[in-house]
Image (cartoon, rainbow, N blue to C red):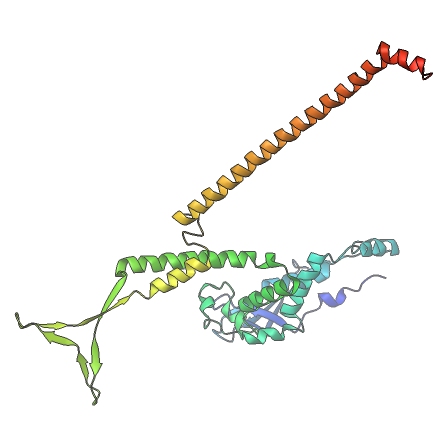
Length: 317
């Protein structure tokens, strides 16, 4: 039965528009419908942007979608339909099923997890580097970037597949390394030790610097509190948790000595194995020579004249 495509050639009442000036996206009825025979869906739709009042047209992806409805084809005969259905054999694969589940969790009925991260364009720290249009983001239920990261972790943990987080973890480690470099530069510039003036408050709330008067010069000197740079602790924590210490890199004297001892043990074990192999080879050679001597002895006995005469005299011959 031939598909009736006439309904796809009629004007539509619900259109998605995008303003080219302020990039606002909205859905509404068209204010102007213009016929265009060059399009598969022969109409262009226009409306006034509610934000900046600019004359805007239909968003391009929806125009292409309308045209695809008109151009869509498919099998007409029973054989063609059967062949088309056979293309689904073996699908979905495990990878496709995982991707489908991810999309369903992200966009489908189970997207309630996304409510933990409501859409707040420009208010999250990640918004500064986000490439998603803020106007489009504001119309969504949840932040798309945070929701995607949330679902990746959820599926990776449920499926026991850490490969899904490989790219994210690599970016995190690169950021950690950059952050540690910045902290090291700050410590080098400001110093390992930081000095701040000592002070106190009296009962009335008055502020007083801790000072003393030099008896010789009569000058007042401020007492300074000396503290270690607080960034040092964070640097050491990052280094130890990311296995960046000298011991982890095998650069300390103790680790080098242990490696040398272990290497000596391996070399000694190699020598022991070699000497054991030589001993086994010698044992095989001795057994082979013993076997040959036994055969030669038996041949000599069988040819001994005295032994043959003795056997004849006793009737054994």
